[in-house]
Length: 448
Length: 180
Image (cartoon, rainbow over all chains, first blue to last red):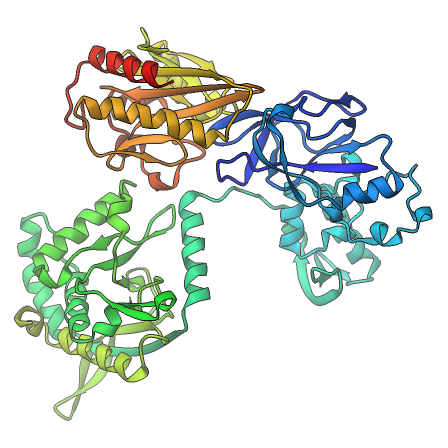
């Protein structure tokens, strides 16, 4: 029978490794425990021993290629195992502890599961009445690049005929598959440089049509940076764990502009850049004190709310590497000048890429100032497990009515997203009103 | 074995390439040799201001690599703590830090029945010197969060512990010798 050995987790918590050296080749007889391949992860180079005695039927991957934990590494031909014995072998659990004396790698090695059971052509399992074993769904063998491309183009990779080693699907197989389908018009038509390709769901059933330009095939695949991984994880957490609701409003900030202008030069002489952000941060902190539910956290596991009596406000900062959210602590106790200094410091650290985990933890509420780049309103994503995030848009001049007269005004757009599981609509509106009161009358911020 | 390099050399990790990991124009101009080791991890620079710790363990029954990282790094922390260094932490897969800054990196090479652990401990090398030769690594631990060498790396001396290298060597040898 054929048996597929998958790359095991070697215990670093990492999900991939690089093939450093093959010790075996196709057709070679190997003994259980004999080193098969040298694999490199972030901090470990280790020999992977053979979990079986048998003949190597195929090696999955070349030196330098990345293999994900759980992906096929070596395919064996296990001589003398056929019929009922093969079924028994295939029925073994997906995970099996390899005994220490038999192998250099200790711990749990993933053994091919039933779906990886591939009877060799010379083995006639069908004659032994086990058709179901042969018909079990098989996952295509493919290079990581091919899998990524298939996902990108929503191609069911299991339907693609592989031309790589041991029938493995390669990048060019995916390209050929997409091009051929489009040309044959079975799933779409080709016009100029654009193809209409039917996309398939996971079961291979044709789904909706979409346009794939020829340029889509010229993909560049890059590994995720650590920052991007963290951003992706946090965004997913927010999406999965909150019920977001967003309220939009505008506040006339003519007085705030006047005060900021008045003190800007004075601050500059002290080397401090004074933007509108310190006023908004302070206004938010004071409003949070009056509306504690916006500064809280839902602890569903213990059926309780956690109200935080400290007001640490994170500021979403756009950097070349991606979004980071450094935190300014105890904003309610800081002066406008203190906050301006703190903002200057974290901006400098973000620019120099020297922010630490300590700079970014323990936030209780978040501000995102997308207006400094552009845009008036947005639907900010809650920084889970916080209860809310306030988006600041670009200042715009509009006519406003003051004392019964239409006069020019400068409006600051605000977008407040909250977790509706925690915060009710009325409280959202009251909190936002309070923030706007502070911003329209900045002296009240100082008075508190 | 615990030892101090006599000259400055750069050592690439198993899959590192000199042109992507090292400022080769500077290393060449300065006459700094580049070597490659058979173990994983990123490129390191060894200087007379660093200490290299090498441990070989033989066993019929090998554990998970994390077991060895933790076991040996804890002994190194114990030795440094005995000399008065505080705020020592294990971070990433196998680093030791003072606060949020790295002072030691380690990696493992494992063959059947043998584990080889090695680490570089920064006694007094300046992060600027390291940043002069090494480019930003292709992979980094979560806690680095994009920081440049100058903001990510520190030394025992820079962290406020002007302990002589000989004393550190002596204590590391004693602790590792008694416990391994």
